[in-house]
Length: 296
View (cartoon, rainbow, N blue to C red):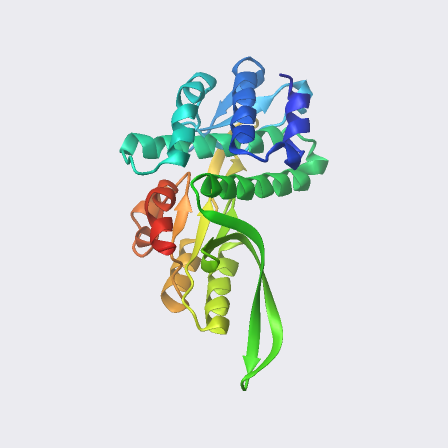
């Protein structure tokens, strides 16, 4: 597999319809990077993050930060992908090891797509971000659907009633619309990062429940909240956080808390900081636990 073919696949969203499509692409990418990178650059400040640098075929581009504690190599992914598919069929068997397989597999699959897209020329960086985001939404929807959950994306119409009369409809575009027996049970947002997006998710919940006089659960799934930052030394990179704890706590306390916030690559302060730690979990908690409470 050459990088050009990987890029052609990654930029064609029709190549990612089933969970097997995602798994196959990930395997191809992991096999490619074993022997075809210019360099693997270690982050200067959080050393478990690395950056892949491509050769000439990838414009010598440097990828987004990759968490080496979560990212499988080709051999490890080959050994665990059957377990990953098994989890999607049955979450009744619940062990810490299987939860790690779920989190690491989702992270590895999505980062294989994102890192491939990082090989595009700088003039196409906006396309890369858009495609990566769209495919992450599709990946999470596909995972939930594989688990037997009625999950779609689309527009939810909310009738706005004034003095007992329906005046107009308020349209909401949602990444995840969770139904059971034809009844809306939960609404989800899926983004690769909370950067520039967290405010809208809280406000969406507030407006939706205000307009409908209901308490429909709203949750969010994020891949990570880190970005590459340059250092003073040329060719050396570090990582910086994009999560805004002040915003998160302010909306949680003064507007309304979300009913679940889930990360594949969770930041250390999300596990320790007051208020934040009570509302943010790793992705496995959604699939093993919380989604079933939401749809009861």
